[in-house]
Image (cartoon, rainbow, N blue to C red; front, top):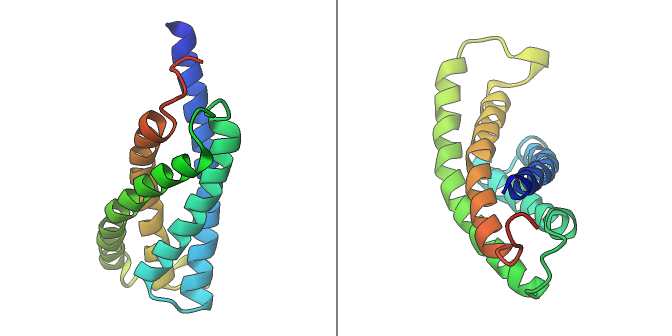
Length: 153
């Protein structure tokens, strides 16, 4: 039992590491879309989410759940896609609500490094939304997408 708990903690740590890489991808793509290409914030966060999900699927399949091979990768990709589509549906209103909240909280304040209030509030909102959806993604993917991996193995 102790061994299986350690194994799941290790998987969560790997999943979180992959998630951190995904968050870097998410923030990078988001800021390019928002600040360079001047795409609307909601579309920027959706596009950056898709880029992060793609990198996360590859890394999770190759590293976090490398022992998950009883299902074809196409089946896992479809399941992963559905889980993350639901995650995007959860994330978008959270992102929007947090962006509005941070806009109100930060209005009139001096932004660091010459950043705009618009950029700071939307990046803070993205960070909050990523953190919340992390748990949805981990648990649903762990027990559905990668459910063929036995606990503790």
